[in-house]
Length: 389
Image (cartoon, rainbow, N blue to C red; front, side, top):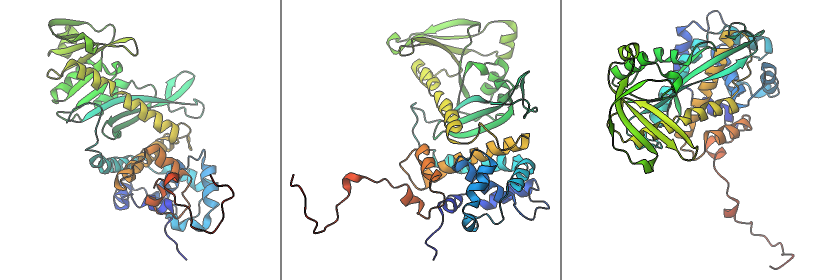
C-alpha cells in the first residue's frame, strides 16, 4: 500500500521540470540518449549533494541499496558507476548553469522582503571569489601555479536571503577583478567589494550604470582631497572626504569625484579606508555596508562545508563545472523550499534533516516541524507511581 511519496520525490516536486527540459533541448543534452537522460543525471547528482556522498561509487551504492524505490524517486533506469561517470563527463555543463539561473529567478522574489543589517530599501550585492584547490596531475586544465591546480568561483550574492545573483567559474589564474566584465549592473543597487576589485576603469563603468559601490582602498591608492565633511568620531569615523584619484592615468580612468571614508573598528582594533561614489548617506552607513560583505564569506563557508564542491566526481572541466552548478541548484532549491513551506529553520538545519531522511515517506512539512518535549502530555493509564514526589 502506498503510504505517500518519498522525501526525495517531494523535494524534487519543487523543481520546474518543464523549464529544465527547455535547458536540455537548448544544448541537445538528450540527443541520441535512450537511457539515463539529463533529468536522471540531475536527480542522481542532487541526491549525492543532499546526502553528501564522497564519490560516484558511494552514490551508486546508496541508491542501489534501495533499488525498489528508484522508480518512486523519479529515476527510471539502472544506476551504474560507468553510466554515471560517462554522463557526468559528457552532458553539457551549461544545461545546469542555465537551470541554476532559473531557480535563482524563482528564489529571489521569495526573499525580496527579508531584512538586512543595513537600513536600505535598495538591493545590496556582495562580490567576491573563492579558490578551490585541485591536484595538478588530475586537473591539468585548471591552471593556477607551476605545481598546483585550482578553480575560482566568482560569486555575487544578494544580501537579502544570500541568493547568488552571478556566478562565474574559471581556472585559478584568472584575477578576481576580471569577473566585473561579465556583470550587468542594476541602476540604484549597491555593490560591496574588497580591495582586490579596485580597478578605476571598471569602477567608473559601474558609476556610469547609475549604480553605487563601496570598496576598500589599497594602501598605495593615491587620493587627492578637495574638502572634508564634519564627522562624529564617537561612531568610529575618523574622516569623511570628497576628492578624486591622483595621477594622470588614474584620473583618466575615473575622472569624477568620489568619497573616502576612514573608519576605526574598536573590536578588531583595525583601521579601514573605503572608497565610494555614494554621496548622500552618512559615513557610518558606508562602513556598515562594507561590514555586510562578510555574508558572502559565510556563503562560501556554507557551500564548502555542507555541499560537495571541494572533491569532485570527475576530472574533466565539464564534470567539475556540472557538479558545482548542481550544488548551486541544490542550495537554491533548499532556499525555495524554506520559503514556500514557511519554515522557521536555517538552511543548515533543513539540509541536515534532508540528509538522513531521503528514503522516508514523511510529508515535508511534518518532517521539519519542531518537537518540544515540554508540551508532551503523558498518556492516561492506570500505572501506579513508584515514588510520590
